[in-house]
Amino acid sequence: MKPKRILASAAVMGWAAIAAGCGTPHPGHAASPPRSSAPSSSPVVIAEAQLHPRTDPGIQASATLVWNRENQTLTVSLDAAHLAPGRRYSVVLASESDATGPSQALGTVQADAHGEATWMTTVQQVAGIPSSGWQVELTYGSDVLASGGVHLVPMSGQVPKSLPTN
Image 1 (spheres, one colour):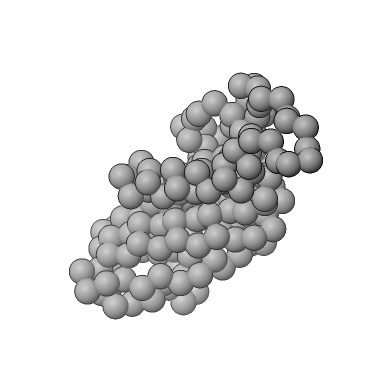
Image 2: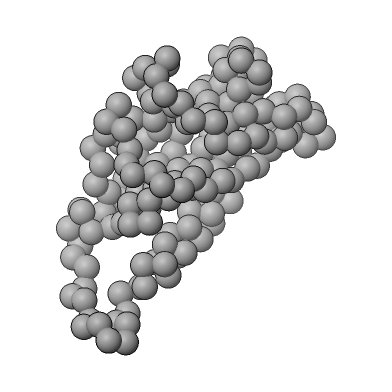
């Protein structure tokens, strides 16, 4: 992962830990037992996608996804280079197995004067990862310029088997 993406992922995981209470007891509640190190113990799943160009072979893009099963949020960040300077692009999350299936436009990103773009958003109420897996697409109008399947970043505490590991 790129340094910016590692910092963003760490920040999101830290925020998730704070939101979950970091395991500290709350007044009036009994202290909960420590979380086990079993694979199902982590509330956060981190995944990434390397987007492959479909039209312009010069486009380079990658995405990091952080899904928190406890608060059902999905944070998506994208880094892209060699885009048309100043142009706005859409970022789409789609079901990987069926290109005609449901997809969700996550937002738009604008390339800077050098054709580079960095972008992040958080989507609320994401109950789970589809069994078919996800793919991230960078689009301009109705054209998919680059896309890539989402793969889990191997780490302890990963649960979903729906996304392939690298």
